[in-house]
Image (cartoon, rainbow, N blue to C red; front, side, top):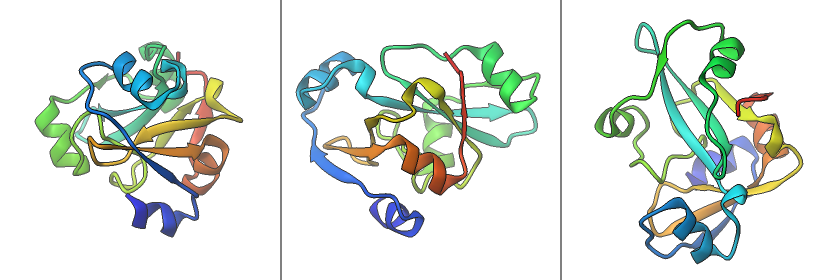
Amino acid sequence: MLAAAHAAGVEVEVRPRPRARSLEESAAGLGITPGEIGKTLVVRRSGGAYILAVVPGDRSLAWPKLRAATGANRLSLPEADEALSATGYVRGTITPLGAGGWPVYVDSSLAGRTVALGSGSPDHAAFVAVDDLVASLGATLVDLT
């Protein structure tokens, strides 16, 4: 993840993250609110291609909004083993940095903020400025929640 961030020109602050059983527990362990976590979701398009969606930890993905943003009629969340195979990251550690180079869609409510993303490791979180992430990855900033 750090090599991918460096290659993309994204500044990342990696912090230790205590093991947690929920997103709320993870946020508390980091001293932040759930809304300051950016959940990276692997989404399968029909035909087997993937996209990534980043949404605040305190919100849920609105499937109709993601379908409208992508122009896709059928989208689904793959099983955990498929997400690992596709990205190289275990669920809960997935990051758009180095996770396949697929199109990335970021919820517009995250613009202008710094959030904790997965780092590829269950023991660390990667804090990044969302605007830098969007610019460097050519991500689409859109209302997804």
